[in-house]
Structures are given as structure tokens and as C-alpha cells.
Length: 454
Ligand code: TRP
Image (tube, rainbow, N blue to C red; front, side, top):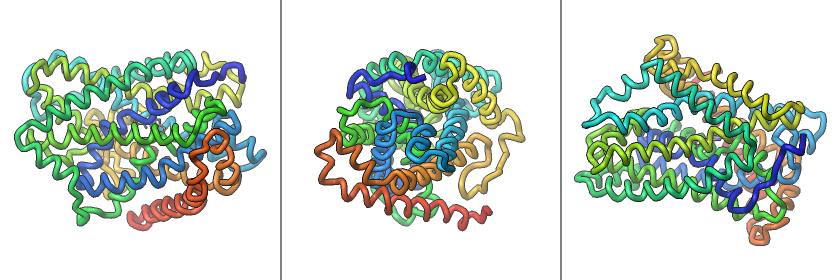
């Protein structure tokens, strides 16, 4: 039902909407805790190299395939190479997006809940405050359900009115609040130790896990690897410059992540917290920071409102992947299918919601080795879908675009309205055809070697 697909209203609208998908809990929640667990600055540096060298060129490849075919990932692959097994790569992306949305929605629920906690809890939070909050099943499941329902309502309305409007107004506001918090956090006594941890690399701390974490985080944060940017690309007009747009999106995304770190690390050293405290890091450090600020209740509430909205623009884009596939390929009505998919996601996410102390079985799940991630079901989902399947999908899609569709064809699509791309085209083709597949393959294979999974 092509009539249900729109085009972006403007180039800015497209850039902001794609940035809205990219910028989310990945930048503000996941980036700081993974940086903290992996020793700080050296991880940040490796992450930035991956973002520029692999993330940026790969994002352009996804946009090019989407714009050339005007279809969702599965349809796009079918159009380039009809009747072929490659279409399963598109299906893999759909499965991955459901897996990611399921645990991401749980954390988005915490974020939402912290709006109210910030407003109504007074005084410095007790040290077990957060763990008590997330092990309460009513809150966990209730907040998670609310978040999935709100996401579904917006996807139900369609791409133009839904995503674009929200992103335009609220992303800039989030940045303003970040800048205020950076200034405040860096004026606290002892905060300079945090800057040192965050910005002066110590390469003796780099291990194999640091490298996988940096690669996974680069793709996760930019919303790459499952064909979402193919879907986004299918809505861009031929007059939009793919190279410049991707550059903006990548820069915005990296800046928000780096800014989040500039708040968290100074604050956590000033407040005497541990950088390696895992997924709970921001939820422990920030409420403590807010509790010391003048009008901290309101600053905290405003922060979590904006973060919830940043999370929402990401969950919208994640739900859009299976929905637009079903609308295009199976000819079902968008209005009906949104609710079925959302319900399915909700069920898949229940074990993650119950894995933070509520149900022992899920809290100590431990299916993947502890050298990769913590044992709770949510962390295992985050690693399996958010790092492993995502990078695996990126590898396959990159091979498909570089070798089956052909990097030359993809490059020609980018050239349509990208004069400034011509001097980088040769390098880009090299990155897509050779460098990215080799680096990602080596890293993925070594996961099996190092951990002994077989
Ligand atoms: N990039 C988002 C974030 O950083 C999460 C996200 C949204 C995502 N859509 C995605 C991740 C698609 C991978 C693929 O919070």
C-alpha cells in the first residue's frame, strides 16, 4: 500500500527525525555506563574511530539502498536481488528490532518513572533507592507497558505527523539542558578527576571486550545494522544530499553522547560513586546530582521528561521497522498491525522487566558468558540483540550493498545530489567493500574464540 508512505517534509525534518532515532538512551544511559565499565577515555577514543570510520560510511550505504528502492529492508533487498536468500537479512533486522525494542522499552519505562520520582522524592536518594525501584514489579511492568502504548499510538499516526513534529521541537531543548548540567557538574569539587578518567586515555585498560563494546555501541547508538536507515532512506527525496545528511546525524549523535559523559563523569567523581556500576549508573548518579542543585526536583523532572522523549523518538523508529515491513510486504493496514506488533513486543520484554531482582530465574539468567555481559536477562538481551545480532546484521547488509547490489551503484545513488561526495567516493567504496566487512568479521569471530561459545 504505497499510498500510506509519505516523503519527508524537508531536509531538516529528515535529519532531525533520523537524529531523533539515533539519539536516545543509547547516548545518555548506555554510552556512559559502557565507558565506565571499560576504563574511560581509551574506550571513548576507539568508539569515536569506529563511529567515523565505519558508522558514517555504513549509514550512507543504508540510506542509498532505501532511496534507490523506496522500500523497507526486505522489499529493498528483494528488488535488487529477486527470489534470493538475501531477503532473510532483512528479516533478521526485523527480529533484531523487536528484540532491542523489548529491553529498551523497559529502560525507557525507568526513565519515565524517574520524572515522578524526581518531582516527589525529596532529599539525597538512599544508596539502594534505584535497586528498590527497579525490583518492584508493578512499577517495572506498568511503566514499561505505558511506554510501549505511547510508542504504538504515535506509530499508528504515521511517519510525517508522528516522528517529525516531535523531533523538531524537543531535541534542541535537550541539548540546552545538557549544557547547563555540564557547567554545573564541572564546578563541583573533585569533578576534575572525572574529566581525567573520561578524557585522558590509558591504553593499558583496553582489552578485547573494550573493542567489541565500542563497535557494538557505535552501531547501536547510530541506529544502524538492522535496516532502519533503509526505511528512513526510502522517505528521502532525490534532492537530499545523503553524505551531508549522514554527517550531521553522526555528529549530533556523537555530540550528545560526549556531552552526557561530560555530565556523568565529573558528577560521579565529585559524588564519590563508582564508574563501573553498570546499567544503573546514570539512574544513581544523576538523581544524586539533582538533589544537590537549586530547584533540583524540577531540573530532574525536566531532564527525565526530555530523556523520555529522546527515548520515545527511538522506540518509535524501532517499532516502525516491523510495522512498515508488514504494511509494504503483507498488505495489511497500518492501523491494525501496530497494535498486534506492540503487544508481541510487550510479551517479549516481560522477562527483561522482571530481571532486575523481581524474579530470580531472570535475574541470574546467565545464558551468555560473564566475560561478555552481566547475568540478568536484560543485560543478556542487550548484548545479544544490541551488540551481537546488530553488528552481524550490519556485516551482512554491508556485504549485500557492497558486493551484491554493488558499491558502485550505491555510490552513484549518493552522487545524485551529492557533489561534495565525489572526492570521497573512492575511499567510501573501499571502506564499504573491504574495511568494514573485515573489521566486523574479525571482531565477531573472536567473540566465539575468546569466550569459547560454539
Ligand atoms: N540509537 C538509539 C539510541 O541510541 C536506539 C535505536 C533506535 C536503535 N533505533 C534503533 C538501535 C535501531 C539500533 C537499531 O538510543
